[in-house]
Image 1: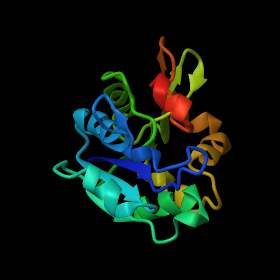
Image 2: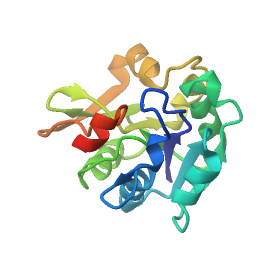
Image 3: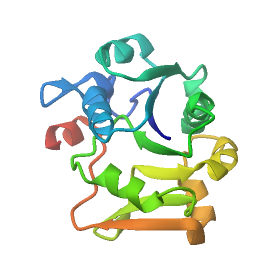
Length: 189
């Protein structure tokens, strides 16, 4: 079983409004991101919300996702990571972690990561887009304790950096999917 974890609890301070609710190709940014994850067929998809939780949950209405509230989103990205990991089913072999503000625009990315994982051979499977490591990243269950120990406003990147020999890469010859931090980013998307 592979679970997907979409982190969508941020306050969008740099954006100047809740960016996850702004439309991209006719749907809210967060919905566009989650729909791409769902299209890859994870066994379970968990979306962590915090700021504007009800509105973001509403934007995801009708999708087969579990909404998890981060009770302390002001504590940073690590608190969302912990809240989401707590909801991952005990039978999951791995979790695929991605962001609600970075819709994956290519269908082959997630299936290629899952295929490379193939069980518990690799602790971490990450994409490299034209040589640059990006998201989403797949973590084997044995990495969960380290993910849960991350603190502050950082996500799983510190765990990846701590274990470079445990990372298997899947290379893609196209640019990394852009994340949205500003209105100009959204317009380019």
